[in-house]
Figure 1 (spheres, one colour):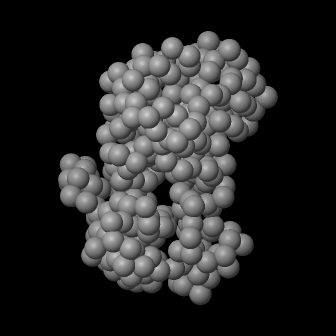
Figure 2: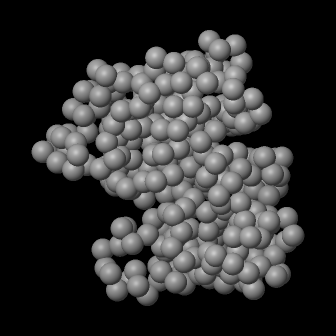
Length: 313
């Protein structure tokens, strides 16, 4: 599978076959990490983070370093020329003079697409506002696949901030391409899924139902995808305070859930998952974070064309 030179801006940029190939590659890395320690030797990753990040930025950096490459970049716009008014187009043109591949997070929807159109090197979207977060979705799907084996026919509950939750938007976009997937959207009316997500599901054979009651939905779920209510997306502080604690998952609520339920969360959490859930074997969110490093390793080496050169096709 040749992904060399490609951009990843939205989940739809890769076919199902291409995503599956990446998952297989990530599984190979998990089993034999020592085989990949020099795959990206001599390659340089630029991390362009205009918005705060822990897991995404560090997992990309760890991924590149574990592949034998190196990393440059910035973790906040104030430490870059963006603070002087430099455009995204000019930034990526400059970065392309130094690096072989770039990953960008930006608070504005469409920022990564603007960068990709101006870039001579592959650009990976690490989250653009409330739009998409495709590498988080690769992380989520790898985590599910490692545990469940497949996606066909699973019931996935997405809970919390579904309006601004880019991880949810990307997850629905990717999972709806698999056969027989059912989504249950759990949110207050103010934070329900945006129209474009509904339209994506309508174009597939996936189904979607809505509810405001998490306890009612729990027994039906194979996967529960929790999200935080994102303070940074709200214009009105009163609305955030009113909605932020609407859904809190705790050990007591899990009594009626399936024994093989997977609880996922893109993190960071605030208080939407109680710490008494952390010891439940159904809690996968920290294992999910580790999967993120492996799938990003697979992605970086593939976009750089280094997986093929390594001989692991």
